[in-house]
Image 1 (cartoon, rainbow, N blue to C red):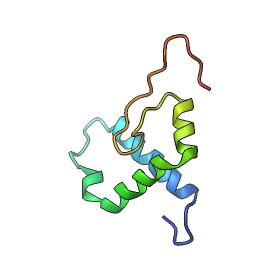
Image 2 (spheres, rainbow, N blue to C red):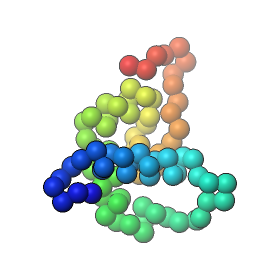
Image 3 (tube, rainbow, N blue to C red):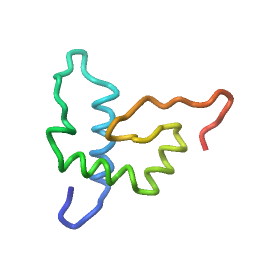
Image 4 (cartoon, one colour):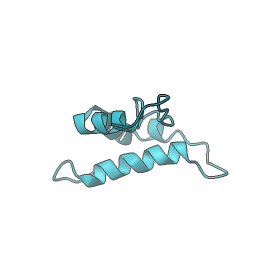
Length: 82
């Protein structure tokens, strides 16, 4: 997001996009926001490839792709996040 390069703003935008898909308003607008905004889709795709994001998602039972096509976490029975 910033001209200076990767920052926490990029991560926060990714999380907000994830939440927007997983927790829509009661009357969500039918907008394909990733398809309409290729730069956003590229940013989310790049974030999904970062090792820290992959590790964080794995530790919270979040499957890939975690930002472009998010799904709810599904813990394995009897498992504890790691």
